[in-house]
Length: 479
Image 1 (cartoon, rainbow, N blue to C red):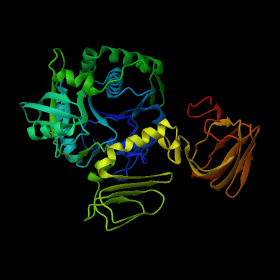
Image 2 (cartoon, helix red, strand yellow; image 1 turned 180 degrees about the horizontal axis):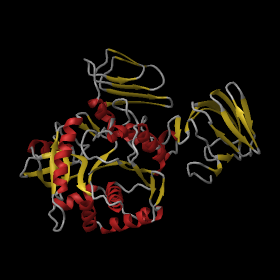
Image 3 (cartoon, one colour; image 1 turned 120 degrees about the horizontal axis):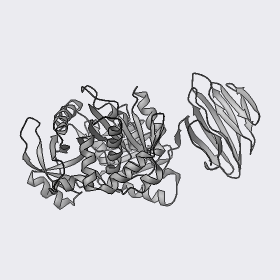
Image 4 (cartoon, rainbow, N blue to C red; image 1 turned 60 degrees about the horizontal axis):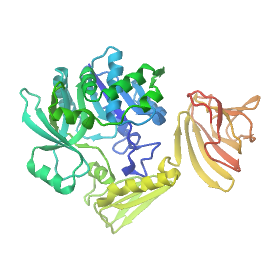
């Protein structure tokens, strides 16, 4: 059995302003119609013996991740990380969960935020890797470099292994180099980019992490022993997992295998030519997108004149570029980014500054996704705020109240069931209702179509933390 293990814990700060903490790049459709997460879920379709995926994600993203998987008609389990601890603990949780369920499966570990353009070539490589993994090896894929890239780690390959897998022995793992070192790797010819993709049996990983980092294995075992299963969600114990050391697959295990530490599984590297990119920054996204004759790639309402080698994204209004080259221009409803393609790695510095200044643009888009639907901040001023709220069919917001604001609701599509104090009423299209400050209330969509409404908030404080929840379908309680 092949078990897809999808790691969806990244934040993608270099792709700000499209990627935000609460809606990072793996949840966005940056290449094609599917989100990067959905494309990863579909990546092994066509291979025999592939199980439903097991996803490991940040607890804050659980509802969006589950909804995107549901849209594909899949039913994979979702392991929730209460805090981020890097890739080694995430894979350890997946391996332990598979073994607990009696499945010593061959795990194909895939980050959810990568692009692979040639699916057939990737599946062929996975089949070859799975044969080696079934024999107890830990297999990774290396990408043949075409430039001295400093944004990737590198793998030095050793002698070719016998057999038809096209695999090589693992000689060395190295971190992201400076440009001079990267050029030496490129000239040497025996270094590949580290793809972050791995294939191994669950038991092989458990044994390897137990020998290399027994503290990580023990913490993950404790966290999983105290886990709660909530539908498709596996909620590991927060305190136990928070005590787990943070480490990557490379540092925790692969570097030690390359160093020849006795008692560890053998490792192999398979060169992969499948149009791979980790889309780590805007320039790498430009590289994988279709382009016009002048080398421009764009999406949305974009007009270009006398422009070359430029990436332009528009979400809400016309973006026009005239007489420029080698730029990245990204427009969202609440932010605009303009940078030279050579400086896209520095976009994360803007995201970090926004976070330090506790600005909402670091975490949220103007449109904020919730398990029941979404809301979009349309307008705001002193003592008022206007939102467009969309509630999915059959969904409901929590039973809640606010200390500092009152709310006016106007239904523009569908029918709302409103709980207001001790009364329950139906509000149809072109009708409205008022929720006074301090009154318990709930909004529900009892119909089979989307409910859309305009909410006007008024009061002394309009922050999202002014919510006291009494009941909630989605397990959110308190303030």
